[in-house]
Image 1 (spheres, one colour):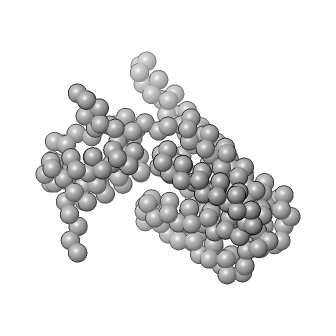
Image 2 (cartoon, helix red, strand yellow; image 1 turned 45 degrees about the horizontal axis):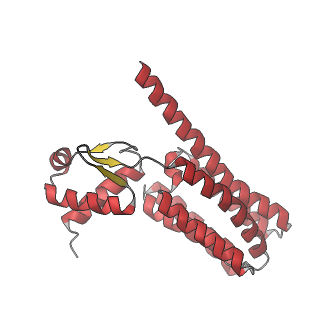
Length: 225
């Protein structure tokens, strides 16, 4: 089935935003896009409206379409809460995970590594969420499990996967996934598993926060030059 021009335009823009080619605040000019990709203006307008609805783009009157600025504060609050909730849920789930669950989790981690190699950020994000959901899936505290799922949904609504804001973070996260699985498979105590799972989320928070601060320092230096 042929992909529509609007879908092509949408995928081009979303991919470039996620990989950082179009950074937060970047102005998306339809005339430039038309010349660069040979797609007429109407599909670009349709794709921009779709990206605006999804929270990737902000259309500002008299300015045009801008890549939406990363909402660092909201993301940090959600990540801090998710780190604690998911750490506890993973530790409670660990003793109930089956051998098949561990095998599936390791397969997901390998697929994430392949997605990184293919620069398929959308697939990486989907697989990453499946990995984390699997590790929490055997938690016998239904209320806690629901809270974890709620915060994951909130995280997606706030912004895109933050791995792509911090160079190298996605690859480091895969090694941390393996370490958590090693603890679970080795029947480590619940506190050690909870700490490892919580630290995994906190490491992402720290990496992205520092990268965001570095971008602001560079922007400030450029403005003062």
